[in-house]
Figure 1 (cartoon, helix red, strand yellow):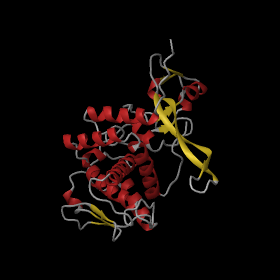
Figure 2 (figure 1 turned 45 degrees about the vertical axis):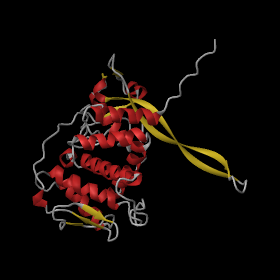
Figure 3 (figure 1 turned 60 degrees about the horizontal axis):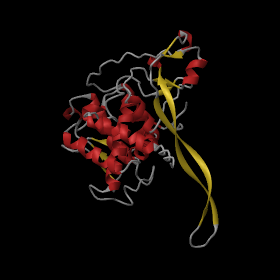
Figure 4 (figure 1 turned 30 degrees about the vertical axis):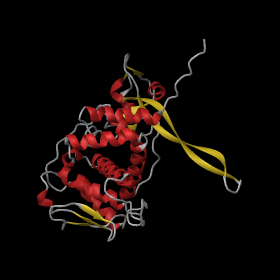
Length: 306
């Protein structure tokens, strides 16, 4: 009897499946799980934040500590994983050197292609016996509520980014609309007093500034040079990039971006449908959103670290 071939593991499908599972529970995973305080998931070994889709995947696990580590790293600190706990998956891109043949000229060309690889990590809450002096001071942060007053950390980020000419200044002349206009490279928002909460205001602001990073003078996603129509695949991807950018930046500044989110059934159904049709959408959009949020912050770091 012929042995059945082992089914190949598809990381993109695994990630998309978990995102769709969350949408099935009426949870929009790129907004709600990790907000409040500086709770962006980060490596316990290095202290560096995880980037891209890892921010969503690890936050979706629902732990209050932002720190994650491999089994080996936890053991190296003198601790152990609590019996019965299961790991979560994080990913990184490994660049492969390949040789490609041009089908027209027959000339061999060397190039690099990204290969998505996964590894397993545990949240700090899943570990025990790690000596206190080996834990960061914010290992188990206390999440505080935010009143709707200008938020210092968010305002400092916006001011510094404008002064460094990384983003256009926000204009509060949008009436009842919030939008980015590629032709004039300008961001337009309603007046501040039309927003009920800080999370709502900064979430919308970061969303529109996420679009602004796609201008040809910045990360060049073709917003001003190759405009696409409403409802197209490119349009949907750009909207997801802007949403994720806002979520990442709200997480960095201690805000809850879910307050600015349309949490209706039609919204959730729409993203569920798009992600079901394109299993790479969430990964590629998250990578672009990480670049966008890094651009606005003026920082750069690799997608992930163990």
